[in-house]
Length: 126
Image (cartoon, rainbow, N blue to C red):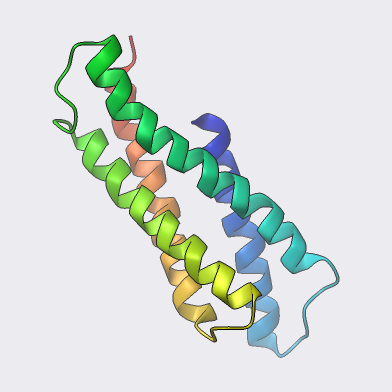
């Protein structure tokens, strides 16, 4: 999950760079969108894998009741936000949406929730 979290924040950084250019009226830098997508896609995929594997680990490996911690609630929120942000980003990349600002804000909230979920998960480490 450390890799997923790192990729989430790198994708956020790349997306914010695109936003700054857009706000200044400058065009897209060559390869900027491709870099953002190359970071964001594996980030969302790895986070989704973590979202599924967390409850399975709690139930099968630790004999815990899944979804009984602050970490699980934050992880569900982060996972949901990342998935919605990813689907909206896919629509943006295909030219089927103009909601770049919404995509950006969802990405910020998703990264924040993912960071909080990681922090809340420290107490669960063996």
